[in-house]
Image (cartoon, rainbow, N blue to C red; front, top):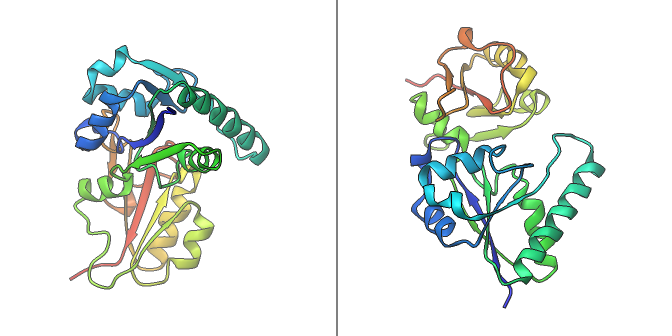
Amino acid sequence: MCGILYGIGVGPGDPELMTLKAVRLIREADVIAVPAETAEASAAYRIARAAVPEMARKEVLPLSMPMTRDREALKKAWCEAAEKLKHCLNQGKNAAFLTLGDPSLYSTFGYLRRMLQKDGCTVLTAPGVPSFCAAAACLDLSLAEGDETLHVVTSVEEAGHVMDLPGTVVLMKPSDGMGRFRDLAMGCGKEASGAEDCGRETEKVWRSAREIPDRAGYFSLVIASDARV
């Protein structure tokens, strides 16, 4: 029988935010798949290992995923990763693909899931805590209340289309767009805050617009919200 691939969200960084289901599936898996050159290079692997120390004894399947916007290079990497996973599943092994946050939110897992399902493989998902939910908890914010709208975007350009609408705007992985997003939010009368490496030892928190830098690391996000009474 073919094995099952589980896409497992390990949350944003704090091992205690991993779900009981994620921990169980990792313990039961035969192989741990990581979107990195090595296990140690994967932040998701390091987070999961802190919650499931015995995972270090399991077989690891590294899947190279280049940090690029080149669509052809990405598709090539996805196809190669899917073939490696399919080979593993065809051996009857169950594999746990670890991903930061939630597997359904801006995750490489989504591309691999579709490819493998087209080939008849069984692929299941274990959700995780998204980074912006963890950041909101850290910042003591409500992302949405009542009939408010929550907008999650990945570029300042996208944010510009929704910033003047009621509700909250989250910019994920802003990199060098943080300053522009901050200024855009302030210009629309919204309150801005954010975080980097939420839940990790390197965590940084910006509780007001004046604290938000122009640039930050890859695992950062900014939240712009309407003032509430």
